[in-house]
Structures are given as structure tokens and as C-alpha cells.
Length: 416
Image (cartoon, rainbow, N blue to C red; front, side, top):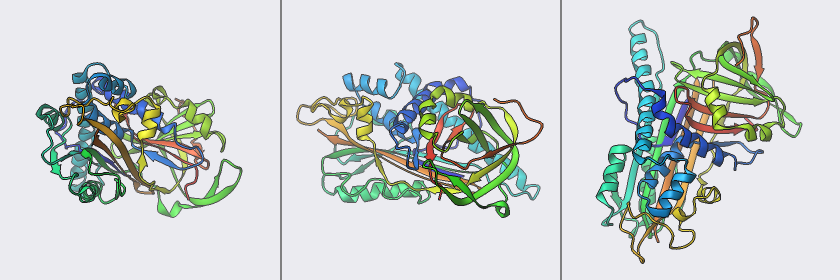
């Protein structure tokens, strides 16, 4: 599996990590992700990266002040302690980097015995693209460089916003192995843009036990409206994380060393997706990260998602994030980012988000990127294997099991 999203993660030395250290970041990521995901239509495939979105918005919040800062903390589910929040995001980043480092070491060890093993790849990158000559506060730039690994790069939005847009999109494309292209659409930036905070994530991982390609064949997939269509479907029997709930089952497919999993939430009925989305809570996601294993025969369709860029401003406003977008006019306060003046102040113009995900016999490849443009103005193990057929609309997530944080969250209503 491969995943991309905008954000930078350096590979760090392997260190023991207490799960509690990541609680604040995980809660913020999953809660906001579920709230945004709830706005997606139930009759369409959907994909977003809660991790990428929160990282970009967390960087923006570091420059907010006054009512805007209070509003962002509330809507983004941040704790009152800014230092604790930054430490929590840092702890989660280190935990993810540790998983990648351990996987790389296991792959190197396997090569000594002539055994091929595909290591987990995880790259997270953050970067600030700011207007040349604009008076950004040095403490803000330093805080993002040290706390989020986000270096500052000057561009000239005022003279050539299209050239700046092309440059930023090129950086995102490079960070995501060319899976995320044209993150910021034409006319997404203009001469009033002063800062773009960008987060990109690339993740690639193989299943612990890969599916046998020869076993993949067209099998029926039942749609919510009662129709059915054939789609290439894989099959595998192994120990999967599993739990049965009223109205749905949860299955976790482990990647490599098992630190991350592909979580499937499968309703009992083809038309049960909307009801299942209403049941989806941070607490349920936390339970899914701790599911016990059962012997399953799993039928899973192959699929690929490449949604267009999603503008998130209106969704975030509906959740209560208003003054950050200068609603009402003159209310935005990012004085900690740059000095606020009556005739020259900063606000968030738009938040652009784009994702990619492909799932097959080897694993998953996915990508996501987020750019915020700042403008001026269990079930017990059974003796017999349980057969699970993912042959109807379902929800899914890419989840870091030790913390419970969701890197990706989506739904499949038609895998074809």
C-alpha cells in the first residue's frame, strides 16, 4: 500500500514511545477528520487524509491570536496547552517514523538470508511558501521550522501568483512520488496571497501476507440501490484483526510489522453505509486499533481512488471555523504570524486538499496533500475461519494502531 499526503516526517532513530504522548494529536486528527468526512455524500466514493488536514491547520493555528486562536482551538479540538499539542504531534510523527525505521531494519535483515521484503515507506513534509519581503514574525517561522519541520521559502505571489502556484504544485508532486498533481487549481492563488502552508505525506506498505494474484477474479459487488456488478476481487485466508458489532463488522489488514493497518468497516446490508457513518466515532476508531485476531477468509475488491482537489473552506466554516476565514470581514487575527494592521492583515483564503489511493494484491498506494492559502485582508477466535465478503459499500481507514490515529479515511460505494 502506498499513501501520500502533504506533510514532512523525518526518519528518526528507533525510540520507545508511550501511547499517551500521542493522545492529544490523535484526538484532534480523528475528531476533525470524522466531522469533515460526515459531509461527504453517501452515494459517492470518498477519500481524505485527516492527518494531513490537521497538520496544515495546526501550522496555521500557531500564527493565530485572540478570538481566532480560541476559535481554531475549539473547532480543531486542540487542548488549551499549545506546548502540549506541539509535543503530541511531534510524538506521533516520531512514532510513525519509528515504524518506518523498524520496517527498514527488518528488510535489511531479511536480505541477509536472501529473502525479499518490501519495507514500509513513510515520508512527511511540511513547507511554508511566503511572499518575498513580507514581514512575517521570526518566532512564528522558527516555531514551525523546529516544531513541524517546516522550512520557509520565499516566492513572489504579488508579481506572479501563477508562477508561485506552479512551483508549489511541483514541490508537492515531488514529495508524493508524482501521485498528487495540481493540488492548487488554476486561480487558486492571486496577488493578495501572502503565505501557503503545505503538508504532504507519502506512505507505501505491503500486506503482511500478500494476496495471490491467481486467486483474483471478477465477483459480484452489491450496490445500495439493489443493482450488482462484477469487480476484480482478491481472496486471502490468514489472521486478521476482527470484531463484530450490531449492524456491521470491522476487519483490520496489517501492513508489514503490524504497526499500521487497513481498517474495513462493513455494514450488514448494501444500503447500510449512511447508518454506519452515523455510528462512526473517535471512540469506535480507538476500539478498532485494539481488535484481537481471528482466522478469516477475506474477499476484498481491488480499487483505485483519485478524487479532484477538494476546497475545504465552506466545510470548515460550517463546523464553526469562521474568523480564520475573515468571516465577518475584519475579524481574522493572525497577529502571531505577521503584525496585524487595519489595512493589512492575514486570513485563510482557502484550504486545498487532494488524495490518491490504490489497493491491490501487493498492498496499498495512497497520496494526500493539503495547502492552506493565507491571504491579506472483539470477537473470540473461531475454530473454523470466518468468511467475510466485502461485496457491498464500506468504510475504510489507514490507521496507526499504537496511537489510533487515522492517516486516511474513506468510503467505497463502487470499486470499479
